Length: 308
Image (cartoon, rainbow, N blue to C red):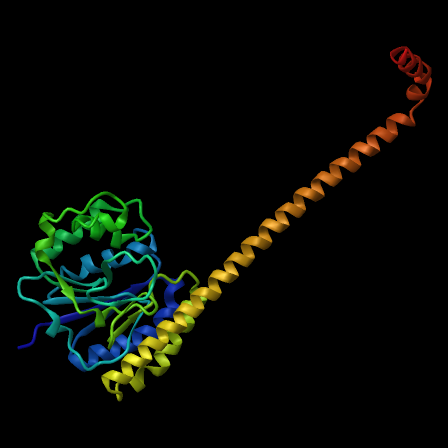
């Protein structure tokens, strides 16, 4: 009898446009392999959006499943021909993709290798319940990776977070195994040769991310009829598109920043000119006053005295 799998994702109302595209692809994967799909949505989360996955995972770990397959809502399933159960390793409780030069094509400059929590295969066990409780209790670290930073810290990977040296002897590492990066390929950053899931992490512009996912969803049915070589070529093309989009977003951001600075300078100049004009008006008012005219002989006498 096959192990039971809960395919889990979650979002709030802001992420709903992403879910409208990605959840149907997750549903198709679940149907192909007999997983139970759970899509948790709403705005009543205990913590900010970056932490909702931990809250959702902890709840499902209390249910009667053998595995939980977590997929971020900004990740799209490209094909359904691989069963996640084939990736489960005996003795491992948490499977995550390691993004580094030894497992992926690293496209981004200055990329720091690390485990990515966007797709996780979790064995339902006391170890997993304890670990994710520890993640929740540890809470947010001073890092923009939210829950992922805390997970890495609790696995002893502080170096990639800039929080100190790695701790290879961290006991939690004994429960972790590498998940094939095909399950968590990030276009334009860390690319698998034949991805199963494209995860659009690290895109700051929500519109760009949504458009990329829409394009991927449109071509996803074609991948199921392609060979590995063609799928890989298409994945590389999406990486190039993501790089181009990121560059356009950067240029737009820099342009907007420069315009804002220029407007601020113009506003300051306008303020200075207004102050100058006000000072001139006040001086003219003084010079035109009766007291100014009456005291003029005294000022002339003082000036002649200083000249002599």
